Length: 209
Ligand SMILES: [Zn+2]
Image 1 (cartoon, rainbow, N blue to C red):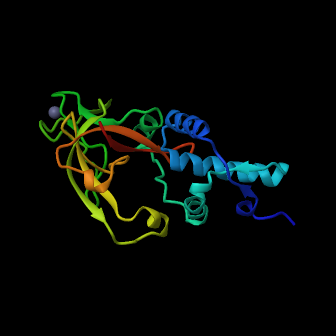
Image 2 (cartoon, rainbow, N blue to C red):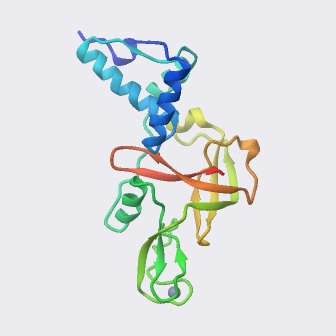
Image 3 (cartoon, rainbow, N blue to C red):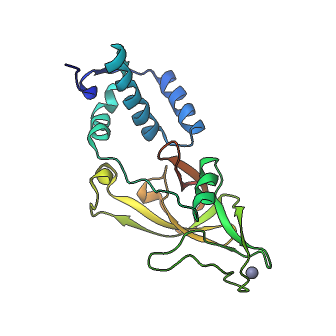
């Protein structure tokens, strides 16, 4: 009988290898922890199939076990209306809606309970087009989530939920990453980054400049 994937991993990565992993994660538009998790799971599959041994850093073993056993986070399913937004995100671009008449930018995301605005919020023109944001933003507001609603997020409590205002004046609900909660500050400059959830979906998040 085949062993379970999590039972066949051994442990070791040098600082140089860690740097390589971080660079690869950056190129994959994700962060190191998610990248390592994905690579480790791929490696576990290879190990089961080919009987090869794979290494995971010793100091990250407990974290790795939590990743392996945590249920997957929900991943958005793009539809026809949101496809340009998610296509942009896959290619490292934060896509917004822009009015063809007056150039006002607005949110590409429908708020809960409110349908996506089909007209310009400034001049009411009905012709909106997709246009990329510069990716620069500032932190408009945030909250820290201490309540566990989904086991997939257990390892991240307390995590922040942030409203950012892009350079184009559009406010989006997102998350600030690569930043300690204590370092969050209203008005801090941010830059978009993309968390890769699958081969098809990436989610824009923001990191301090
Ligand atoms: Zn307009």
